[in-house]
Amino acid sequence: MAAKVGLFFGSTTGNTRKVAKLIKSRFDDATMSEPVRITKASPEDLLAYDYLILGTPTLGDGQLPGQSADCDENWEEALERLGDVSLAGKTVALFGLGDQATYPDAFVDALADLHEFVTAHGARVVGAWPADGYDFSDSRALQGDSFVGLALDQDNQADLTEERVDAWLKSIAGEMGLPS
Ligand SMILES: Cc1cc2nc3c(=O)[nH]c(=O)nc-3n(C[C@H](O)[C@H](O)[C@H](O)COP(=O)(O)O)c2cc1C
Image 1 (tube, protein in one colour):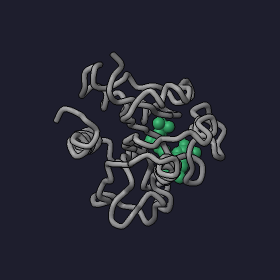
Image 2 (cartoon, rainbow, N blue to C red):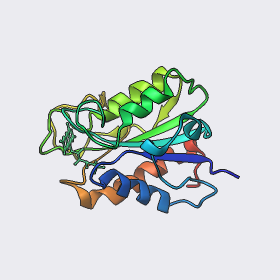
Image 3 (spheres, rainbow, N blue to C red):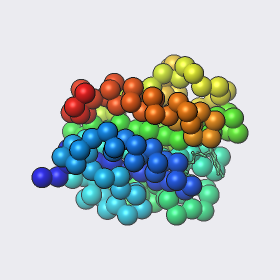
Image 4 (cartoon, protein in one colour):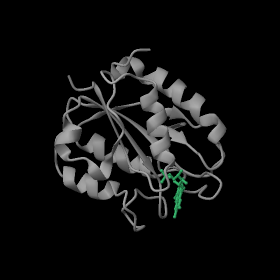
């Protein structure tokens, strides 16, 4: 039987991939898929799951990979492939990698783009994450005092990643059907 939760990511230098692997390491194969690179995923691959965890770095000037910078890990293209697909009935949790010291005005902005896409297509998004403990000036991914998904910074706060991931997974366990 296929896993309950599908885990998809894009990654240029490997940071988001590493976090995806960390997330997967917490669950068995019946619960969560192996992390799949979004460039290798078809729309059907994503649509096979009622629960999705999607991860992206922010690149360019606060953008999803593919919106400006030339790179292989093209989330933008993947969303275009998904087109006007319905995500109604799906529950989605998002995580985003960024660098708050170098890009304090656009910290994890790409989370906002993924959030906009999946909500516009009918998905329910869970896993908002408090913005305490970060040092940045602006982020499109903020809604009130929280990010729309888990914000991680491997460039400046790598030592906090594991505990943030575990706390976040615990916080979404009930809504994502994960063992807690
Ligand atoms: C060209 C470039 C542009 C970036 N732009 C942003 C940005 O606008 N906002 C941000 O939070 N991080 C930005 N970053 C930082 C990356 O998101 C961060 O290093 C991330 O961990 C990379 O993940 P990856 O290795 O999975 O691609 C940028 C990095 C690069 C190389």
